[in-house]
Amino acid sequence: MENTKSQSYLVPLVTLTTLFFMWGFITCMNDILIPYLKGVFELTHFQSNLVQFAFFTAYFIISLIYFVVSATVGDPIRRIGYKNTIVSGLLISAVACFLFFWEAKSQNPQFIIFLSALFLLGTGFTFLQIAANPLVAILGTPQTASSRLNLSQGFNSLGTTIAPVIGGFFIFNYFKGSEGASAVQIPYLVLASVLLLLAGIIFFSEIPNVESSNANDSENDSKIGALKHPHLVFGMLGIFCYVGGEVTIGSNLVSFMKETHGMAEETASSLLAFYWGGAMIGRFMGSISMSQMENKKKYLYMALTAIAAFALIFTITGKLDFCGENIMAQISAHFKDVSLYLIFLVLNYLVFIAAKSIPSRTLGLFAIVNMILIVTMLNTTGHISLWVILSVGLFNSIMFSNVFTLAIDGLGKYTSQGSSLLVMMILGGAVVPPLQGLLADLANPQLAFAVPLICYAYLVWYGFKGCKIGKAQTEEEKSI
Picture 1 (tube, helix red, strand yellow):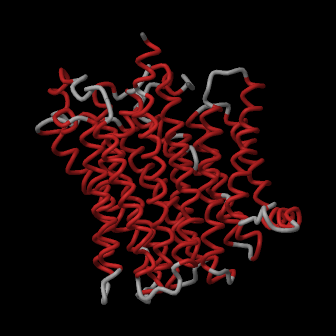
Picture 2 (spheres, helix red, strand yellow; picture 1 turned 135 degrees about the vertical axis):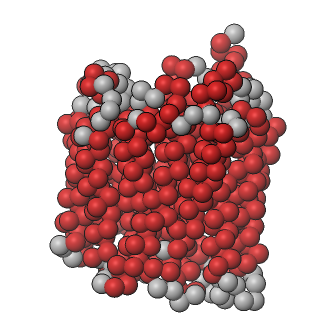
């Protein structure tokens, strides 16, 4: 009976995992849009970073509205259901992508219309954030909920890894000869079509009616008791800093590589896959690290996962011609170019071991390493400065999940309310990138990377101190 039930969840789970992939892919396309629209509309660094401001501001505004509604009249998801919330998010996101297509083919495209489309896209993705994660956890046994979420989030990172390569190829190469903003027409039309397809599949999928499972707690939802927990409030700022730091680095890397290292935009977009791919590697390694398996087996699987994920990134960024001649020479040349990354991959593995699977310690140590990497980048040039900043992605990997978990620990009946507050603070992705863009305009693109340094400094404090304030000491020591 249980096996039959699990099989009935297979199709919606596969569909939701595909959704996580597309969600990551489209989000990371913003990193390609920034240098592209910068060139089309002759924007400053500050103006081009308004792309992320428009997109991530939607997370804050829509989450704030959701929080106010849930705290006054009850949780909206309980009224319309998880499935309908996801379908609504997909439809809104599809409309946003169609708006990109429509404006791009205009004779006189306007930057403000693209920003409006990005806000609409962020609105759709906010609904997905609020509903998709808990739905993945619900579709199956509680014992395997964490495994399902880690798998889905891993595919989200896979989307962010390949988006720079595929998006960069089509926008900066295949459609390079297009006039004005028209190079984004076909890519965003395809994305809109895929989102509509996913909405249809999820709508007709047999997903259980789970929206009223906690209906008896409706009275509790009308209160704002979550804000009385200091570790949650500090965690909200932690999410702000993490998303702000991660997004602003990813958003400005292509411009940095182009202006400081003289790279072509397509080449820079391809290398961006190492930054976002690092998050994929770290998340898969983190899911194994936090498991209950015996240490020797755990460390072996972590190493094999890291090697396999690196091989994937190496292949998709190398543009290797396996049908051509001298394939070994191609592989050797590409390996020489990216070999420095392996040093940081090994460092990531060693820090995981040193953290001993304790979420707060892992967060604090990873944030310290990122600060060291950024300081190194600010004081070096050439190959070293490039690869140390790309390697920050490896140590960003577990930050969102660890901050999120630490912040909602012990909230009890206020857990869902606390979760909506944390999603609201994805606002960091809207605020921090324009600040870095402004510093790049006033000084230079390399010095501007000092901005996320402040974000990681806060995460060091939250990992070692802030997550424990107002929470029983013994709870932090549970260590999973």
